Length: 339
Image 1 (cartoon, rainbow, N blue to C red):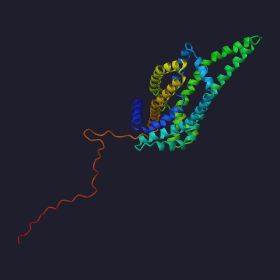
Image 2: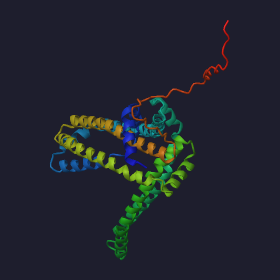
Image 3: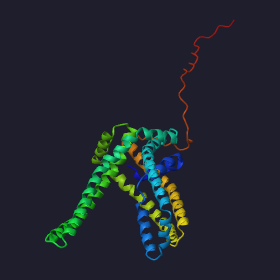
Image 4: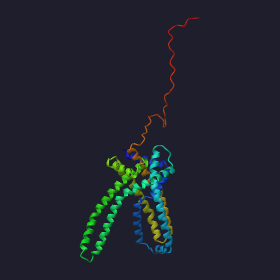
């Protein structure tokens, strides 16, 4: 499997078919990717807030509380709509990249139609695969909550040692929980990419799609290596995004803290909107990479023969003639008598 050839082909498909960016835009807007920029943003906010006067910001919040509540409500509605469209866009991207590889026209409306047709299947694949991670996180949160209650109740009682012991045991279990979550994240990430493509391209149920993705991973058909290879562009994109975010957002937060709330918020919204374009392109490239890998893994990739030297692109040899050739005249053995 030529993994870097897959990445090159995926970028070519992404760049040549701009219609894919529309679905990539909605897919990235509904995803939770951007944790790196979110972490850097909060860190820069804490740094600026510790040295700046936040009284103008507090006064502005008090005067515009109703406007803030309405804005939050609109953001919630917007997030729900983007989530619904994002699931359809994910399935539509898979379909359109497959259409491009098959040499058929790539049209955004066809991608939306297929995406909504398989919306429930794509949603169920994501939900079922996310349940183990949700369960592990829930157990970890409950243990942390129980440890906090035990320590709080045992401060002035005989159960203080028990509470401390439980808290210490929990601290020892945290690395185990982290390892389990990372391992589950790897499994879910690989199986999810394969399962969505089985569901959309081979039209199987979400249960069968998940089963086939798991079987491909167990059979070592290259999906795990593909997941590792995709970390390279993901890290590169995240690093560039983090650097740009720090350069732009620190002055914006300082402006907000200094009292320029409206201007700062508008600049922040403008920056977020501008980030959606490279996010759409990268998400399209990511989806295209997995779709092309899936086609090659399942044997659906069309092999195009390389033209021979000297033959122009698109050259087609002339078909053999179906007409029979005129047979040569038989030899004349006898002389023709003279008149």
